[in-house]
Length: 98
Image 1 (tube, rainbow, N blue to C red):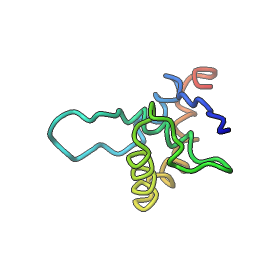
Image 2: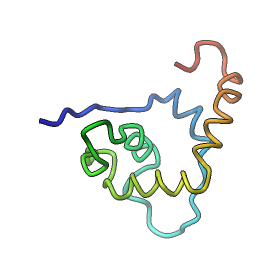
Image 3: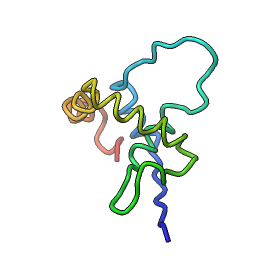
């Protein structure tokens, strides 16, 4: 039996994280999955005993979620987020971000 954790980023969390994310460069039709859905899928992440292939479809196709995770890992985006997130949080009023 596989337990499924539902991981949903709050609007306040997205307000803080959103500005730190890179802007896509591709033009064309709208993407099927929003960046927020994919980030929720990355946050779901593979926990012990699971793999990316077990990610719920509501977060996007597992290949897309994992591909975004790896691309941002190679490009140093996660390091940028971890470095800048504490400073960005300080700019919000106390209690505005959980």
